[in-house]
Length: 169
Image (cartoon, rainbow, N blue to C red; front, side, top):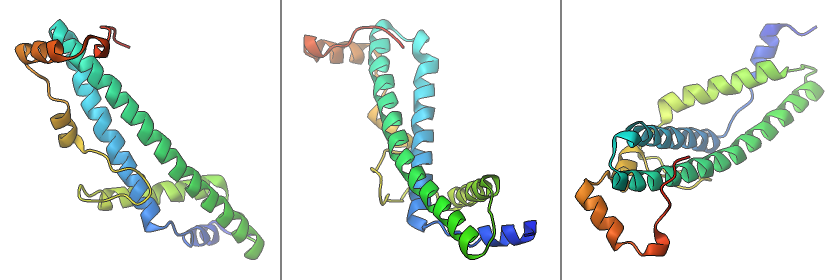
């Protein structure tokens, strides 16, 4: 019978490449930034003028598209990590005769990623296997909340076929 301490020692041998940890942390930060900006606009939506609501509605749709894109990229990273972990579990069971349960293995990976994200989440980070994203302050610069007059001028300058209907999801 294998003791819990032997299992914990064995799972610590599972090494996640730094680039994979970095990219997962980067996706998490990017997703968090998009969600914060989305929430900011969603909370203010009803207090805006009709023109500003149209502008913000477009921002919300673009941010939702960005969040889906981040999720899709992150899903690929997590699938890669899951394959690596399953391979390690099978190898450990075969070579060392130590069965590492999913709870132990997943808990260890969650701890490693959480610890890594707290230390490594740098605004200057350039991702390896995922798209580069705007941070929170860059998102606010990209999506300025124009004054009523500026929003009206921007809407008037937009061709009719590009204007979006005024419906909120």
